[in-house]
Image 1 (cartoon, one colour):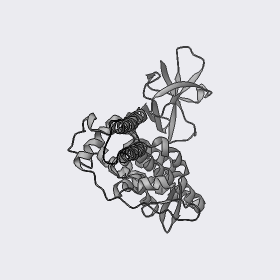
Image 2 (cartoon, rainbow, N blue to C red):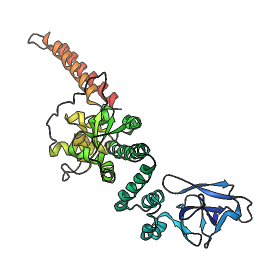
Image 3 (cartoon, rainbow, N blue to C red):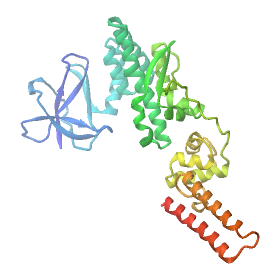
Length: 352
């Protein structure tokens, strides 16, 4: 258990976000700061070299331990500050955001901290104008690579997670690039990502929604996504099958999702793209149906391998029966059955 001692101002001027400083136990000679997890919890306390006389003494000695929500602090002056958990500090800071508009970078940081989406574009615009006064090129670089590109990647990352393909497509997120042409942000990605995003109007809207929300701050048009060109040849997108999942098929899809099947395996079984599977999962397609019974489902895994084994077995059976020339002998029938049973056994092993 650590106790809050005070607050450190790393920039030395006000207004500013302040760093809470702790003493882990009574009589300790060293002071510490929080190491915070991605979930906003205290992971540990790291020693700090901030001198005691540089600390603004806390008005409350809040106790905090590892695993607790982290403490945050903001100060308008040395005597006008608060410190508390993120949600509580946000409620204190949000009504006072207008006091920060003269400090564009801090204003943007505070707006994002409190989660004020309505103000975010105004704050982004203010930072862009401030940077442009010094260098238009630097401002555009900040806009493209520090603001727009992360939003494009964030939207596509969420879509990839929805269809369960993080391991397969996650590394490709880092290869997405962005440029502006005729006021339109154009993101360039691996073909597999473009195919996923372009499955339907809804998947494209969802993937690009975070970036679309902020382009008005820079007087830009809605972003678009294009594939990387390989060997100078444009990518020919596969023609849609035009198939729609029936209610019965959607019931099977729901059961296969519950079983843990991969989205692309499920889509392959029904001859549709993964957008239809995502629609069933999200309740956009046949939300009224219940999952099918386990015994109604096909084997788990890719249908390609199963189809190949089945076709090979059928061809072998056809050859055995053709040799009977109309009179199926017990040996030929037994041989044909052995072929089918062997194929089924291989399919079951693949499923396991």
